[in-house]
Image (cartoon, rainbow, N blue to C red; front, side):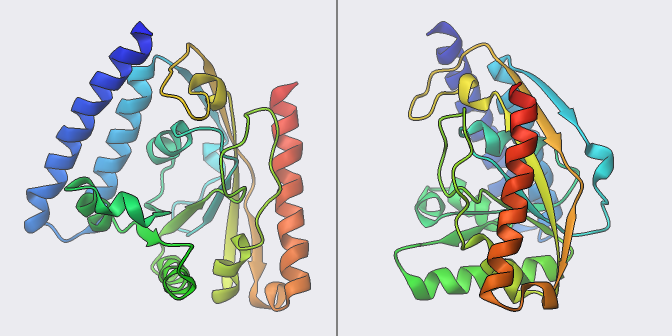
Length: 240
């Protein structure tokens, strides 16, 4: 409980500071890179306060001059903090629209270029996917959790077919599989509890698809299954 309380207080203060650094300079600074750098520092701080030992491998496999759709398994809220903090890319998250309604914090998310989506509104969801596809053409990267929700931390849930919709809107797509192990023990699903834990993050080789490789539903499903297999195999390797 003490660890959880300390983490919560420090993270709350840290979030307020980072949000303030987004809001006030945001009236004058237009470059999204500034807000991305703040998000990266924010993510690192939140992870640091948890006391977790985080090991990252495979960073050398990332080409900073390319854009990626980063696909990762999803165990806890810490997946977001970890990925925001470690990836040497200017990334965008697709997030529930309700987070964008949080005063100041939601405004900071918009300034950082994050994309709001309301899955209950098909028209708005489609526009969000179009925006996400444009991000890739601007040499920015997207982070997606294809399971669609948090797992129990012990298994990978089936990937949602919607993962490929963004790719289908583009011409050439680089998927970057990232596997996270231990985040579910660090912060169990549905709780604010923070446990002492080791977290391992493994970045795999990128998988490239062109438009011809994704021009039918059958090909999209096949590509999704290939990516799901990569995540499952690598996750099993980290668990053993």
